[in-house]
Length: 295
Image (cartoon, rainbow, N blue to C red):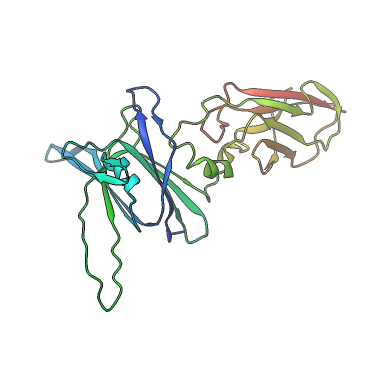
């Protein structure tokens, strides 16, 4: 099991809108240089109902999520944005009525296997932190600031955090490359489609050692490309045909390779169920199939 051993690429993004039941929107992410430590502490409370002299039911509620960010420095522009202060002519002006805005916080952490875990916290506010200053002595004592924030779930959809791992079976490089440019967006919500079949639907005279290739309109979740969801059957009686699947690097093509040669002069059907999903979790809209006949 890989453990987390690093932290880098710390970003914040202003939460522009968070409509109930709607789509939240964020401003472009801004990097905070010099990430040292990020500590996330969800606060939960549990209650147990007792009946008939024993525990009968239990419920857990999520409260606020505490976040502490230790960084090399927090420049004046970042302080003004995160804490709601005013920056005028290079001077940071703090007033008692200043109100911090809601923001999202994102970062990535290196794991011991060389892969990264990416994180976004969806909605929170930061508060004034303690200012500690110390004179320079005989040895160097680094004084690095800590930002403290309280995070909550979004009004739009109850989301408060999301992760992706580079070593997860459904991860593709596009997820990591977009992580800090499109924060916490729902992504594609359109169901995938099948672009083509090879052999084409209704093809005849196919060799008994033929492989079938299914091309999807977008990258698919690898965990759903299984022989339970993509399989061959005889049209005449529905008998299953043993086969193995291979998937291309882009996750858009699936090759179905029968374990043994097919029977001659027989009609076969390639089946794709609605359990097949794209990398955003959208299912195929309807069960799909293509038929061909061997020579």
